[in-house]
Length: 461
Ligand code: DUC
Ligand code: ZN
Ligand code: ZN
Image (tube, rainbow, N blue to C red; front, side, top):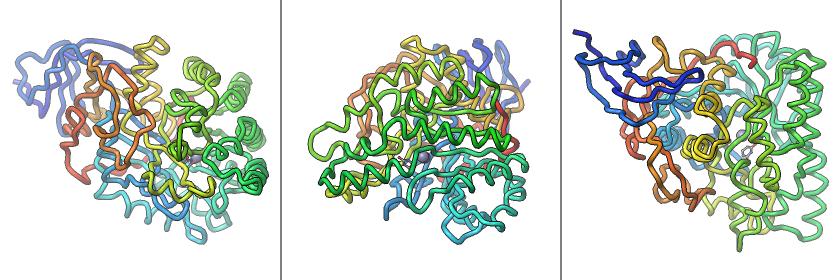
C-alpha cells in the first residue's frame, strides 16, 4: 500500500496552468504524487473538499527587522514570518541593507543572523547596495553563486541612494554575473525640493509626505532607470509601482521588447491619498514610499496586472507601531516609512481580484506565487504544485467571510491599513515543506524551521 506523510484529499488544485480536482501525496516535505484519487493510501489526511489548493504564496518584497529612521520595522523574522504563514505565504524574499563601509559578505552575515533559526517559513535574501566601490563590484559574482541573485538600488533616501553612475555600473556587472537588478525609483531632487519648501512653510503633517513625492517623480525615475538598463543591455525589475506614470513606462518598454518587469502592492490597489486626510495623526499610518496615489490609478494598475505589464503583487511589508510613527509628529520627514501587509496579501488579492472578476484563478496564482518564483530564481522548487516541488501549499476556503481587524492578525503592529474591509475567501491551512504551519489564522509550526533558499538564475517573463 502506498504511504505518505500527508495526503490532501478532494481539493481543487489550482496552478498557473490548470485547475483540477484531486489528491496530493506528500513525503519528506515534497509533493510526490498528484492524482485523481489516492483512495486507500496511508498517511495523515487533510480533507480539502470544496477548498482551493494554491501554491504557497511568495512575497518577494518584505522588510523584517529593518533599520529605518532611527528605529526598526516592528516585525522581525519570527513574528513577520508567522504572520505570513497565517496569511498563506510560505516564502518571503527580504532585503538585506548594506551598511556603509561594509562588504556584501558582511551584509549577508548581518541578515542571516536576523533570519537563520528564526524564520518560520522559507526565505531568500536580496541585497540592497548602498555603498558601491571596486571591492563590492568584485564580490558580486560570488555572492550570486551563493544564492543571492538579486540586488536593489534606491534612487532616493539620504544614506541609501545611489547616483546614475552607480546604477549603470551595477546594472552591467550584475547582468554579466547572471543576476537581476531591482530599483526603488523616485527622483531624489524633486522630493528634496518639496520637502524643504513644505517644512519652511510649516507644512509638517503626514499628507505632505505624499504631496512632496508626486506621481511624475516616480514616473521620471522609472523611465530613467529603464533607459539606463536599455543602455546597459540589462534586465530590470521595478519594485512597488503605484501609478500610471510608472506603469506606462514599463508598458512602453515591454512593447519594444525590453526585459523590464515590475510589481505593485495591495496598498496601491485598495488605498488612496484620501487616507492622508484621516483625523489627527492617523495619516501617518499610510506614510510609505512611494506614497498612496489618487484612486484613478487603481484601474490602471489592475490593467497592468491583467495584461502582464506587471507580473507580481508583493507587499513591501514594513510595519511600525503608531508610537514609532509619532517620531514624526512635528515633521513628516521623521515618520518611519512603511505599512504592514504580509498577512493579508493573499486574501485581498483573492477577494478583489478573483471574486470580483478582475483576474482568473490562474492569474491569481501567477501574481501571488509563480511569477515571483520564476523572476527570483526559485522555480519550479517553489511557485507551483507539481511532483518534485516543495510541499508549500495553501488550503483556501473561498466561502469564509470576515471583516478585517488588526486584533485578529499576527503582524507585530497595532494597526492594519485594511481595518474594516469585508472580504470573502481566506487561507485556512498553510503547509510549509509538508508541515502544517498555520491553521485558521493561528501559527502552529516550529519557530525557526524555515530554510534559507539559495536562489538561482532569474527568469525574464
Ligand atoms: N518604502 C517604505 O515605505 N518603507 C521601506 C522602504 C521603502 O522603500
Ligand atoms: Zn522601496
Ligand atoms: Zn521596500
